[in-house]
Amino acid sequence: MELLQLQYFLTVARLEHMTEASRALHVTQSSLSRTIQRLEESLGVPLFNRSGRKLKLNEAGSRFLRRAERALFELEQGKLELNDLAGRVPGTLELAVTTASTLPNILRAFQKRRNNVQVHVQMTSLREMIALLHRGEVDFCLSSPPIYEEDIECQIVFVDPILVAVPNGHRLANRNSVTLLELREERFVGVKRGYGIRDIVDAACKSVEFEPHYVYEGDEPARLSALVEAEIGIAFMPSTARNERDPIRYLHIDDHNLVREIALLRHKSRYLTQGALEFREVVIDYFETLSKQRI
Image 1 (cartoon, rainbow, N blue to C red):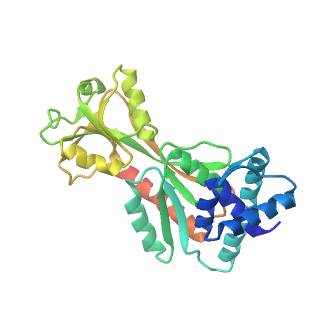
Image 2: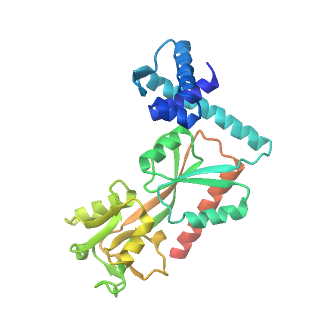
Image 3: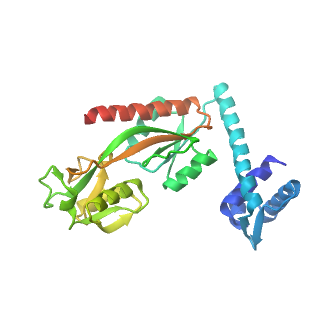
């Protein structure tokens, strides 16, 4: 069994299509097919159910996939550890986020400490983030909501109040706070179901027996302030997304303690380089400072 065979197998297993996998690997389909065939011959069992160029993992393939991912993960961790031991700083720190409102300040602070380390950021769904963590493809994740699993280290770094954003000139713009029931007849702009903050808000509104009327549902939280300013609707927004320069008023919610928890996540088996350790320090220091400013 060869390392190249495992790498090709993982790509085919994820894409489930020979043409797409060969394109991703920059090899010919015939070369890829022969490599997968040799792997199956060495294992003594087929790993895929085939239908033309489409492939679907069978039970044997699904079981072997978990082992192959773990094997390649451990080899990559060994490489990271040896590079660190030799004083070779890795060029890239891999980061996945479901919340990006605090990211610019964190990245700026980290670059001041480690300007020779590039940070590659992926904005993902919660489901995608969990998959990246288990495959060992990211050093850290910034997530809201937190993820609690046995092999994932989860550290709550900030409790972020959720506010109501209204445009200047709105009937509530001269207020400092509001109750949920007062928002019953409003139009809302927000993120789609499945985002942490949307699920928190919908549950709170349901508890007082109303369902927000969304006129816009998207997957770009940063766009909401522009939509509020344009008077398309009002929005539930985390305090960390507040920009005092925007012509928007932010109201506290009186009758519910609406907050979201921001967590720093990593897979417990992933080796932490010196750069990764410093990144964690930057994140914790940033949110500790932010918490003190809010007191």
